[in-house]
Image (tube, rainbow, N blue to C red; front, side, top):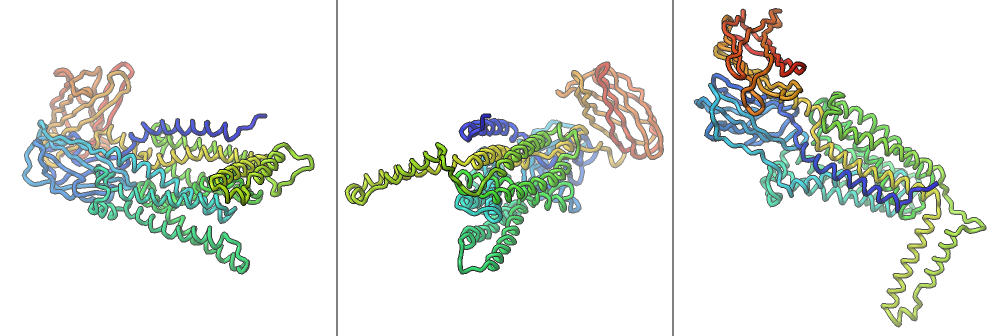
Length: 638
């Protein structure tokens, strides 16, 4: 039976990673929005009889506001807002800005830009009209992040996650399983990576959220604004915690790792307890810097989601970071004992159990429904992550089998195997290659050449001796396969943190389908207009119906319905029906007798609405024999 060697496995893993990166390229750019705009007041595209006192926006999650987060432009493109938008009634998911008095009728443009509570910038624009629609000269371009800043910031996010996993996983492996130089390199490398990535993220945070160039990274004013925000405070806290982590690393791989004959067993145990407690505090604190600034801090149940997110990240770090440490030890030829490998196997199993439990909660919280699991980008990436985890668990079963075959000794049978004889021959050649004192004194170049030859021979001998142990070779191949999938899993996990959650995307779609807000009705007497987008699903099934009720009072009213296609052109449909129902009084449905007056336009006069109140308007549109849809809105009748 053929075994998968490291030489054959590396190209496979490289191909898999390259395919993933190709998939990430087009996917990552389309998921920049996290806080979905669910409603506006006045509603998007609506016509109000008088100028409102303020413009209010409601989001699916909390947003961070700046002085220019909401700008209102008149038909000539001049600002008519009072500036300094604020949250309404202390609700972080809202933004409102007051309007100047005495503004004229016409169409007004609202441009908004904010930062989601999960630290990602969002932006957009909509229009509303006062009195009647008009032409507008206001031009709004949605700001986009500088390509260089965006690329560096995205790379920094990936590197920060990788550094955390290596740091925590390497330290746990060193403390609970085995401490050696390769494991130390993994942990220290993780610390350096995390520190460098966090520093870069802190400097680039301002340019990233304000869509400025790389040159503004050292703008102290911009940096001060960043530190005043929750993501900026989280990054600064991470740097401070990494200072404590540096001390922890010095003790773990320094005095504690050295066998000190003067230290009693009880003293060593006390140091171990101190390291365990201190390391746990630092690891939890570092994980909390992500939880407090990303998805867990916004949306449903943040009080529970944040500790669950910390546990999830710790589980990933112990599993994947420990896996990297085990692979480094095996690859270097370190004598990993069977008990040490089994200890890590138990740690990994416990980590997977934690990941499953916390992952189920996070999936429910971020996705919310089966439709969102398969119908949103976040849900599809989540399914890929689940498949990768399942694949890693399957590969881990092979690692457990190889762990059971490990032996702590290195017995050499009487009849030496060819690999052992080769090792001894190489060792003898290495000894023969050692330069004599005469060679050193006579020719320094010759001595250096012989030293290089000896080093190469000893390295080759060590590699052959390492590969001669079938149990360790098999375990190394299995762990290498796990590590390759872990790299892909880390990339997908980081991408999920930058993708709009399924719940938010679903809410955004529902908001877009309803015109971005509830139906607009006048506070006093006057006509009411309701704009209702529809999509019957068939050919030419999309369009918008504008329903005007005049004077929107109890008694006689005229109903005017205009239907346009997505391009704004009037369009006829085979069937159009409008009815009204008063749910509280159990009146209706009252159907209107609409008559077609011109292309895409229907009218009814003398329609009786017997009383004031909030009525339910039901619009039914049929675009073919089988394609039909019914939309419902509320309107206020005075």
